[in-house]
Image (cartoon, rainbow, N blue to C red; front, side, top):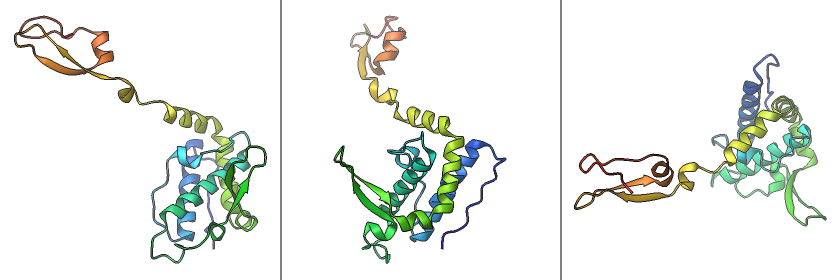
Length: 182
């Protein structure tokens, strides 16, 4: 039995999206006896076509189900069940020749209330979702900014490890020799 998901339409759209995702995740986890944290938005919206909210909601649910499958406990009765038992069927696109998961017809029927809430939340937050996914795809500047060893004119020279971008932007002066680290 799928629990009823209630969302207040007067709620802030961001809270509506967060609430719909959290409630949907909790409902899916409860149905398959899984205890796990809500995956990040990159995982949830992977391959979701946000221009068509109903299809995006189905993709989000497929992604939730695949995450649930990965988190099923070893001693759970769901552990050795095939993907179809979770409502997933494999589909091979004849054009791209790539396989992907889709919701089985019985899963579409079972999760209809959940899909409606997700569709509504995605429709109201399309721009926010796109912005969130874009920001999460930005490379981490700390990883991109190499660290270098700079030294001053002291004898023996003092050495510091510093980000190259900081060293390029400003001069760091040694307090002993009053010369910049280079």
